[in-house]
Length: 254
Image (tube, rainbow, N blue to C red; front, side, top):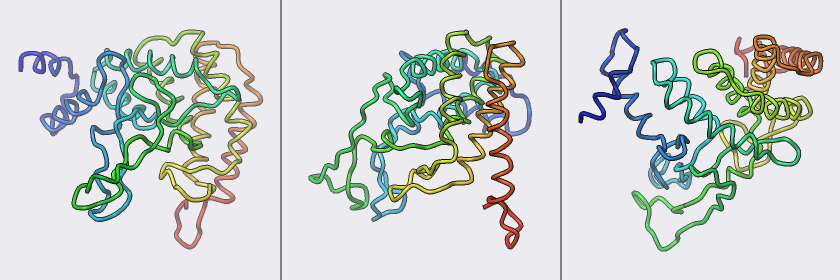
């Protein structure tokens, strides 16, 4: 109790519903791995999205997207130590990029790359929801949005935490160059569809975010970067979103 009270005392949030915010912060803290700084999406395995359904995933891994949102939440209310630990974990993953310069969608808490998905057919599952799965096949998927969430996290950490290293910047440049070459491709999206890849509006928007934050960081820190290439691609994404992403019948992007 003393440990958790001491930890909560670092919270800088003073607005409405403070108790609720602090309880939520405790949950996010409990999702972090003290040894590595990684943040799991959820501490659950094979709980069905709907009872009796087959969408029963193992979430005990670190998704770049989910962890980036958690990092942002903790950092905004004063928990910079957790942000620093997670950024160290992120830097290590960025240093292990695939040969083409891309990043995985999800990793093990210890940084493992291989998360083979298996079904445990001898188990009944919650509410007889089968199959029971361990591992997660999403680690093989291309999900373009993760680059936006990652670069936004790096940008915010540089702004509210500590200046990022030049080494991390070099790895970020490789990621952004990959985004320039691949943002027009289809992907599995934030919904991690198991069917054929598609063009998702959210994925394109987050590619725009990735390049925008890269340009801002380069300007803010006077980092060397292929600014013109990034700028041209960022603007091209914006134009495509306006031309293909707006649904006039719904008066909404879709």
